[in-house]
Length: 366
Image (cartoon, rainbow, N blue to C red; front, top):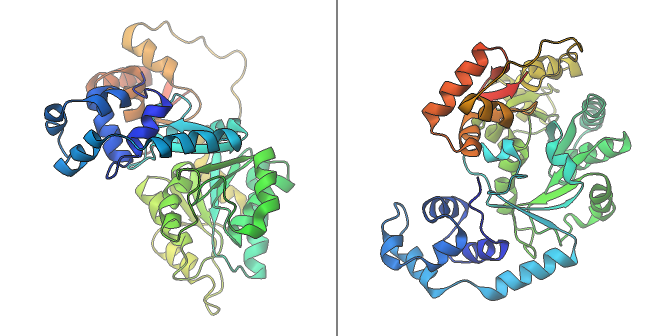
């Protein structure tokens, strides 16, 4: 089921002042497509809860055609793909968070979106210890089949990306600016390497400058895309801690590496551990925690029993599920079922032993 409408219309709706991702989702859920929102009568718009008169006035003034045309030209020029919240290929994990972006501008290997992924973040000024720990866990996570997600910032982020690529793995960089701008500039070579062997991602339109307010907001995407977040080294006021807070809010696992109690460089990670983050000293600490969630157990034997014959809503829900965990709300959306119908079908499938419920109302096919 899709309400996306044309890319041009979605960009046009986004160009209207005071319309962000949440309001776009609300309006499109009511009217069906972006085109229908833009052409809706004023009286109909006024009936939508949460849409102010100011927003309605902006809609009736029309879209910013220059913005739309510029975006389309830059997207084509730089080889960027535009995923919308309503696309089938939009990452399911990200769609399940509280405030998913309406757009994802992506460049590189799109298969990275389907890979099990894990975030590594930390200080922009790592110590030798922080560098060693980051390289170690990035390498070992890649060796265990994870794509590494980080923010392309100086320090820990850069090390995490570089180590993943150096060990033949995939990495996803979530930017706080448009994909046609490279920030920080010293990561120009890394930027190119990621486009060739990983994926660049941003919710920000082409041409967006790397303004300071963008980076805290993009951290919710880093955590939202991930099965878990590891903070390898961070001071008490490190921006990386915000990613940990987002992760906890999104029901993602938060891991932290303990460090010195005298240097101050690990005050942030030490405090996270005191607050309930899982202490990590070896890769097994992460893998054991995620084993049930990500189906990391040994492959099933070939003589497994056949899948039972399913009908109706149970069959529809079962076919939506795969080895990647999906949230119950996302399943309901894909199946076009009510919450009660979805939960009933999931319960039946769980009793049949063909699916498993994970933490946070996530489900996976066995």
